[in-house]
Length: 215
Image (cartoon, rainbow, N blue to C red; front, side, top):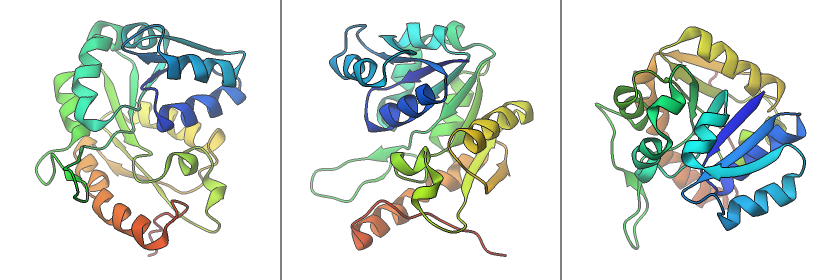
């Protein structure tokens, strides 16, 4: 399967590198087809990895990951072009974090809306699935980094799309406990976990932790 990655940061690199090891063909997209970080990804990931523009990666991927900073996700998807994403699954990993100098990041959108909903609303022909956004990028692709039972959340409007994403989460990233919260409005809840995640990271001084729902 061909995968498009939008974004050249730690998240896109972790996800793309992991998928290449599982036999996927992965194109990392950025503003420039010659982006240095994307070139480094291709060099390190090896066979099966390639790079291009946002539009080229969106066109290339049968499934596309949004691994951009939440503050630029809308702009990036416009550069990727809706016609290149129409009918495809967009796995939205981004969070609407607002960084003010000297302050703990806050959310630029919350309570009555979310980044996931914003993307779905503006790109109605795309099947947006929100997941992986409540943890560190290394844990995203390797659930075993945290021992014991812990959970990953997923939401989106298209049931078949979520089933396909769950297969990747389970088979390629090692997730056993996947909680489907329902439609894309539930992205509000998962994105609003970020303030406590940030504070827990400060307390533990390690990103290797996760949430578990006991009932």
